[in-house]
Image (cartoon, rainbow, N blue to C red; front, side):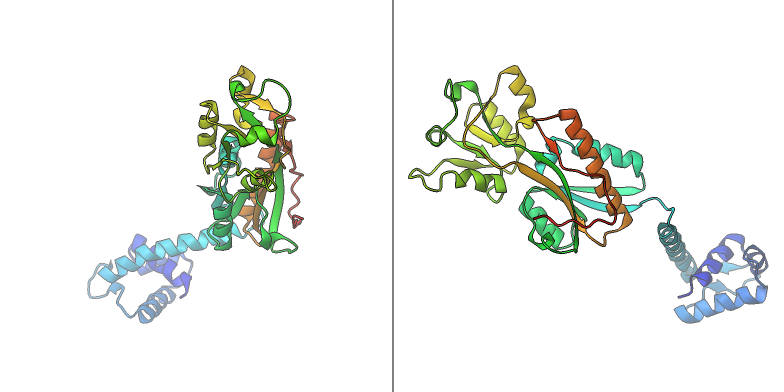
Length: 319
């Protein structure tokens, strides 16, 4: 369908005559009449009431005008989005783990609103495994999480941006810990161990510490960071989490960080398709900038930045 014919009908509905429509569109009156007739032939309905002395649209014509206005608006938006100078625009679906909510999601949302107001942000919070499945099904544009993502390894199909590294340590109320010295596996076997969801890497690392032990540890898994924090503050068990999550209670003495069996750090990355839209690339770039600023504000040893200045041509693959 020729959108120029749709534009002609919309203008005709506004000015109310073929003669004035021709003047507005810088065309002859005969050309305007021909466009309307061609549109009527294509749609199979009369759009203009020709029996009346005054130009009026038929009911079908009024309906077509409403639809034509939407089509023309979409056409203008599409043309604008393809111009090199056009700002990033459109819907961007970002999936994040709850650790991001606890740390730098709020600054990211605020910065995106300020720097890219034409981006329509849609946030999903879920476990790493669920986010990976949603990215595979193209239900997310960007995934921010901490587990290996096999489809992005050794290929150029994904844009992978390392963001930050959260160290994992043992955290508990002081009365639940030994008075002095490092925690041992014997110590950890005697209390519930609180960590992330059953499918997460941190949970697997905690369980791996006890692979050769006779006693099965009491590992309690929670997809909710807030649940872990509340339980450890209530004295229920020892948590294996990033200390930055409970920084205020460590400073106040309510909680204590204790050395013990080493756990790998949580490495957080942002992953999107290599052929993602400019809006998605802009959101991923700004995510890296926000994380760099967050890490600088928190400082070592709370969190370490992995985000390098974003290269739009760079396609990174972990591993």
